[in-house]
Image (cartoon, rainbow, N blue to C red; front, side):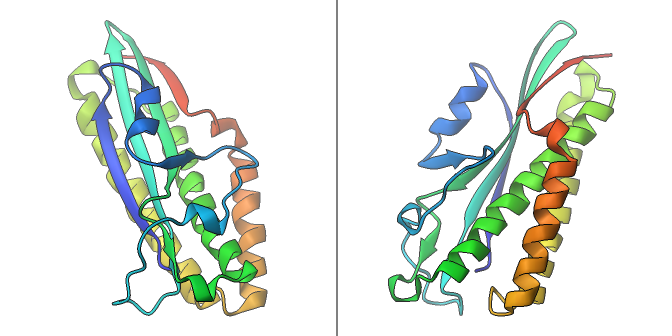
Length: 186
């Protein structure tokens, strides 16, 4: 029920497609399907939750001269996400899926900020690190608020409100659903 997020800022030397090969992950895309079979991690019995979603928001880049390609991906980590098998319920799965959707929402927010920010080759790493830290802090706070207001999926009416809210926000940022950003460095 409480998501774990990983954040990586990397200099991509080969290709942004390498980000998908880090572990058993599912890339976010519209219509992505997550099932209980995707929760392959071992349950953490020291926490009071029945399930846990681990996601990764990665920011990577490469540049040549003044042309930069920045990749901001959002991934569901199948190996680290887990559920207690006896607690698998549709309502809990919807709750966990929304944690992943919230991660994509903040990946889109990062893409928007990056798109709107002038970058220089001399400080691209520092600027992207600052964006990453800011967005991940906001994402963590949003995820906590979601868990608190829904009581980890137990308050059905709040769960429905949050689903509507998150998907409306995702739709409002649809222009930033492309994981690749091309920029000209200053």
